[in-house]
Amino acid sequence: MQIDSVDVQILQLLNKNARIQWKEIGEKIHMTGQAVGNRIKKMEDNGIIKAYSIVIDELKMGVSFTAFVIFFMNANTHDDLLKFIATRNEISEAHRVSGDACYHLKITVRSQEALNHLLNDLLKYGNYQLYLSIKEVKKHYNASLVSDE
Image (cartoon, rainbow, N blue to C red; front, side, top):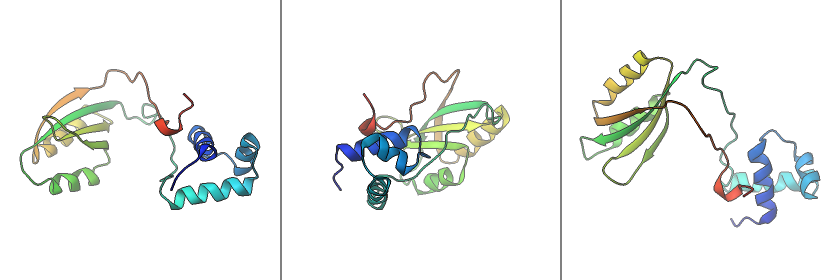
């Protein structure tokens, strides 16, 4: 599916506020709410819009440790590790990467003990380097294709 400038405007508005009403989007881009809804449905059906989500303040939820793990496999097959990653809620992001490492993982946990437990479980699949986040300085939710810049 090709998206046009109107679709990009809709995506920008949804990216800022996923709960915005179709009618309000329509008022901002000079379309009817129904026309906006049709375009949104088409983008959902074609996988342009994958999901709608919320942003949680992890510190207020008691999640006080964020760690980044550079992971090195000790086996040729990644299937077992991928199953492990899928079952662990503490692993909020996982990226297969090029270079010396195999994966970069973002881990969020409530305590140092929980982090240690997860890291011990990870050792079954390979070795890692650990980097603890001192302070989050930027969190960016806008996709580059729909940014205002």
